[in-house]
Image (tube, rainbow, N blue to C red):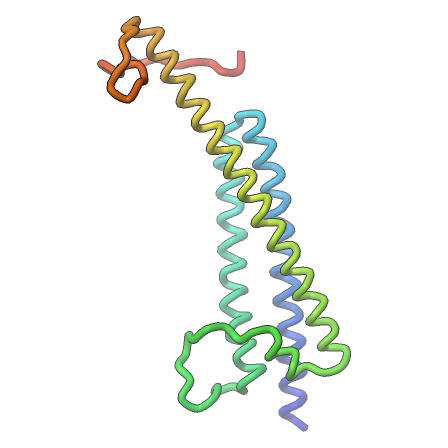
Length: 178
């Protein structure tokens, strides 16, 4: 009976970790929305601060993931794992955990895991959209700087790559907000 109690506690801990991971991914969605707006308005300083915030969230997600993998192994295999299994092998699939969970716990785990999967997919989609926008902004800014450099150097000469030749570097600054 103690073994089933232990499993029930481990499954409850798994529910808690999956909920925490879902919450962390929701925080990432908020960060991505803020970053998209910062890229849209070309506020590069804000993008850097948001990236730092995302990095902190991802560190906590990474720590939770390590805990989840260990917990999943313990749920399926017990505290010592199966004989001969090396530590750090591939993660235990959710289906194996669901086979151990019963009743309401199983339903909760399935619902939480589905929600986490959906939120993680949304993070991936928004992240790729923001990345594409940031790359586009970077290319645009590079073109603007190249045009400014060309105008200031008055060279009017094109180099081998079909872009204005970049002779001696000039020191200048451009106020893009005015």
